[in-house]
Length: 138
Image (cartoon, rainbow, N blue to C red):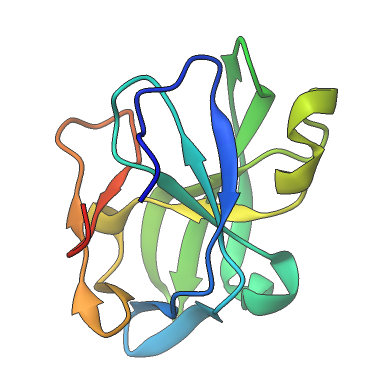
């Protein structure tokens, strides 16, 4: 795996199998994730929108700013009335260097029920802000 201590962040593609589930429903499943590697954090995994069950995402009013990627918006996951606020985020209009993640969705591993890479459970990065995933290969 590429060193994640990069500034500015670097985008890397992955063919590893990612599955994210909440309330017994698979929210996302892909082998086409993009990893954003930055500043000594574990990578954040961005899932292509066509591999996300977007009908379970409700866009929130919350917006944050990243000096590199631009403005991020957040989603609540809602499956049959069970909700996980601010469980995912994305960039609908990222800065030009990060157009690869446009409309992709990243998930906080600690705000979903199951998050795996190649069948192995992800360990969420500590803290509440960064959404990095620690996987078996890191």
